[in-house]
Image (cartoon, rainbow over all chains, first blue to last red; front, side, top):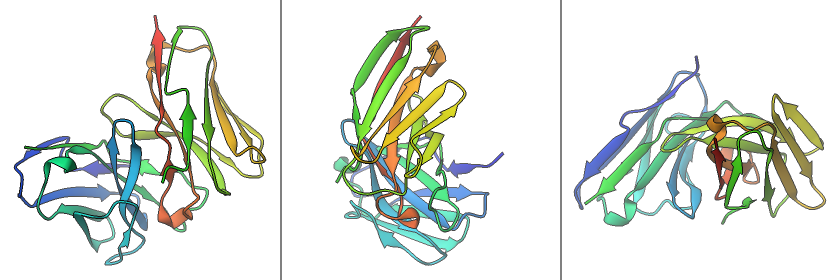
Length: 114
Length: 112
């Protein structure tokens, strides 16, 4: 059974902390994505990567960075967490080239910044 | 910016009835996809329809695509309580490797 696994379902962090959200996929997919989901706003793309050590900004990259040291792992980093980053974070992956293929999602990480 | 916009935002129907959700988008696409999200969980892929297709079926799901109107509809027939979830349309307007663009979703409630 194919899987995208996010390291935490729920996370509570303090303002100013550095936060790491981890995502691992076992499907040998090239493309990986980080979205955040907020009520009334739907899913918005933060960053994506189509290869190891490659990263591209999505629609809302401010306040975030990413790391892709290995093909199967894509990390989202909040350099200094703020309360407006309280959200549901979703990781997804697709095989190259990504056209006409479904995206596989992790179960989501609900992050609360206090 | 949001590419897909679902309509209605929320829908409540009785078990056994059919549920129809609509999606509109703005730019040209290669395909349009529908996903389901159960409360507090990740998204699950339901169906993909390519731009040269007009209708597609999968079990109790029927999807239509009208590229001239830039719209799609998802029909769930003979609804069940387990169909209660949020449904999102997604387009590949960014380009396949650049991620999907999602709408804000329709929250469907099936009353037993």
